[in-house]
Image 1 (spheres, one colour):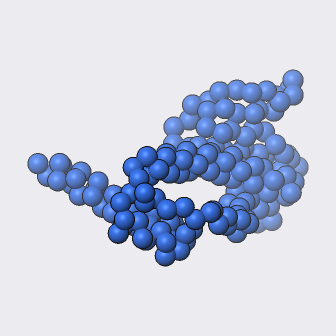
Image 2 (cartoon, rainbow, N blue to C red):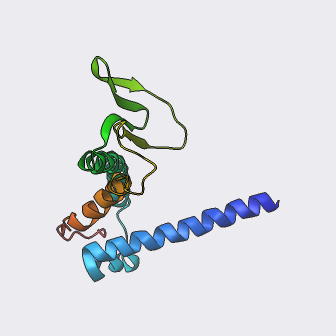
Length: 162
């Protein structure tokens, strides 16, 4: 019984947080007009379409963020003299082999992507001067740049009421 109550409490808390985020996003996009939905009848078809479109766009944004995050690691590594070995997005990896670049499939649980690079053999990796900072920070820096360069588009005002 405790497990069921914990599950229901988690679902309730998650739902409330989700609703709060949705209202905040709607307010940021449409301003006070978004909050007028509460006092009017809502067109269920428009609401369902809006939710479906939002979920689809969130999924696409999720995929692009992971892809660009890993590319950021690669750019940071290449800029600090690392050599490319592989870059993986979900289970698909582009791997450098003796025959050039090849696509491979790896199923690694717990990661959405991975950028593997290496230093030349003549660099002493025990020194504090190993240029790992930008290799590691490249992904986060890319995500931050994407966040701040996103253009806020003000859509046409449309009412969900009939």
